[in-house]
Image (cartoon, rainbow, N blue to C red):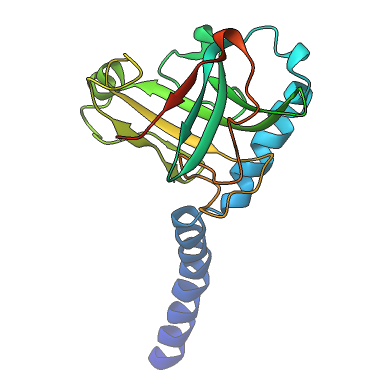
Length: 187
């Protein structure tokens, strides 16, 4: 009788534990396609740059001879609020091809000092749907204070990965925007 109760108790413990283990495993691993799909859903309307009325071009195309390019960044300053939100990227990234701007991805940007001050209990870079932001110290070539950033190549495949900073399939060669400035990252 005691053995039977022990087997029932063990079975109950296993039955309760298995879902919990499954939840832990699921929460510890995030499918990158989830964030990519979220970005696509959130930015579909911005594929036409004329719909990006809350965003302003930074007036340059960012490229690197070794890495490819980031493209032309359009920022929504109101969204640079220290709160990463997958549905509202701080920057949209376009590539100019054949005289037309094509949305290729987004960049999430969080200024480091306020983020770090607000997260002293749990220090570290922001994480968005399982993707860790990169830290960019100051001074930097952008003239910004230290910040965290995450690129998501949702609209143009990147052989370096969907979250790499540069995309070798993106080019600034046809950029003719504001002042025709190309920000070269050669060192």
